[in-house]
Length: 427
Length: 160
Image (cartoon, rainbow over all chains, first blue to last red; front, side):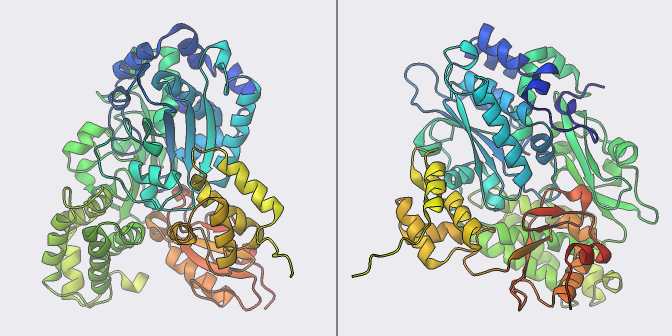
């Protein structure tokens, strides 16, 4: 099993410096691209590879890039922004890539920027990821000194530099247009689309925003080719994927595995199965904004297509397990508290709807639930659903709620009927 | 007449200007500027906010809008050590509510409060991206993982 993204990463391995990274095949993809390929040829390889965005939405990267104006008439500077604002609850994969192999991300950025004819790259990283930011700053400095960043990279005519931009903690910054406002030094409020960032992004210039893991795949695709990348996967969605498991399992963690491995294999073979005395009741397949799946879905392929068909999303690929000793209503309340707190407040359904949802769930947890509350929650999942809000935050927040009401409805009813949380004694 | 003393130190100004040079517009360094002030002073007072806004060519109200938007900018004084306990979903499943009770009892403060000796401030924080090591907290930026009552008392040593 090939693990290109994590080949330099291991419990006993320190992050490779530039020399070590190059000794292990690093910057080969960048050399291939800059020395022997035109930007549109690189783009064609990325399109052929079927790489899909690893930030959660799964949009094909090559298609995203193809909307960027190219050539003489395109406005400059053009920007490449890496979304390293990993804050989806239950997600811990980009941290690993940045702390343990920072050069991989930088090489990916150099190739991506060459393809897009971008002039400046920003790594937008959440404020709490202090070690990640330090590692990246060090790696950028090494690259500048070695002629891998700056003017005439690798003696080509291509100029590109990278700055590490640290944020200060707000989930909405992960939304790409809110991220651009934040990067411009404003409150992180999403922008209307169109215009799309590829045409009018940072300071109105052409801008591409990609997730860390997405960009980390680029060097390997350029070094080994699109067919190789597709061959890594078990299904139609190409490549490997960083999968994670948290909750009451024996060995929570994050592993690079072939795209399309089943949830059961990940949980049993990598996460060590459920802890003694705990049974799996459900799981969020890819972070806090994905819909619950249950035991019947454990043998589905963990890829964008299969998980989408089952009514959820692959999201970030980091699963959160609901066990039988954890209250599903309490878990959903915890998630809605997060989303209510992290709403930017710009549009009314999200700003006012999410605290209302949290309040209803809190009432249920404290024995104040009313029989009509379930209908109220059901209505909210539609009012805050896709199409009714400015961005995807509130619809994402409704995913776990709507699916919990479907799969764990008897638990909601038990809270109301019994006038208490059945798990309360254990809390 | 006495000359007006600059509110920000030459060091702070140099650091902010250096960050601002990375962007088309200085305002893009607003979060960095607030964090630089906070690194030197612990929090962002009205006076430092005004001075930073001037440096970044923003109105103070605009910069305050930024300062109050982000979770890690403090517009009120905080203790020497800020304890940020993750209360998001994986940490909640793994028992962060009990950790909160232990921390509160150990420090004698609730969320949003600072100990009387000015040493510790306790705040909740959203998912730290260390869910495989839950429950977790940050103490002045240091990630502390696999928390339980004993570990809390090892990390935070109190005389009382």
